[in-house]
Length: 435
Ligand code: ATP
Ligand code: MG
Image (cartoon, rainbow, N blue to C red; front, side, top):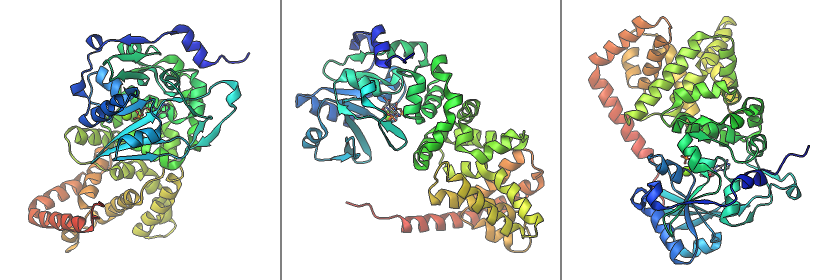
């Protein structure tokens, strides 16, 4: 039997949009960033439709602070550019407008219709997504290209109402994530939606609707075809937003973690209790630091995620006669080059992870002037924190960890001077802002 057109299925249920007046939804203009409002007003005053859409509306309805504000309009990209001097058009095939206000970028997209009907054919691939022959459309076309019902709500600046074609408001009330259309088709069209489902479920505390949840396990391998750079972006959003511990559990449950970190998954599959503890502690520490507004780096998580594969391989090399340091370097190279086939990693992060691993060996050596020299190493603190993490996960390192804790207390002035020096170096290296 031919599968029904998803648009037809949902429009049968929701023929007309539900328009929720401002008195009923609780979003007020003061919640929207000043810059997003400026863009909305200028579009409106120029006679175009102007809407806040996506996570901005969803988060405000939930009383959360949106990460960014995305807008949608019936103005075409060139028309948007004419209205704003600080506007750049990006994207090759489908152009988006970025309106720049210092560090804040307001993304404005023109309503699009994506043909899901048979005449549109298979489409072509761009960035791992299947892009059908997209054409500009109206608001009620644009709705269907969005991923989840709760991401397909439009706040209209004209009258402050929220436009809901898809039952998104009810799903917000029910706290559930429901993919628009037929889940299997939508995941095939863009497999990253599976990661987005997990990310939003955790961030919002929502349940993934059973029908949207069901195909994920089987379709997870589709993520292997997504460019590694895009997966790295997703990795950052998944693990650096303050909920990495829960995200990790859910990603594993759905078989998605295995695609992102295949070498780590292999160790986990072998029932390695140590790695599970190490990762859980690393994620909890990261989440705690983020909650306390302390700086975090993805390099530390990367070091934890790949530590056991690196250490195991290094052990093999050592038993084949290599020195401990050579073994760890060689193992780091191999594990990282395997990893970047799944998720690319900027060099500055892989480099830092390598340093953290190599320093684990140097931390053992407490003879002569070595410890004092190590205190001034740029990665000393990260390496010491990593040592504590390993100890917490069950390695017999208590004596060594306590020794380093005491040593630092006794040489606080050396630590502080080194920190100042690293900071100075960093400032000297920082490129001047382009005008
Ligand atoms: P957040 O900004 O909090 O991560 P968001 O929902 O705003 O969440 P964005 O990545 O900023 O997510 O995307 C903005 C909107 O664009 C989404 O709400 C959704 O409507 C649409 N969108 C983004 N990525 C996809 C995708 N892969 N498939 C379909 N729609 C998408
Ligand atoms: Mg957003």
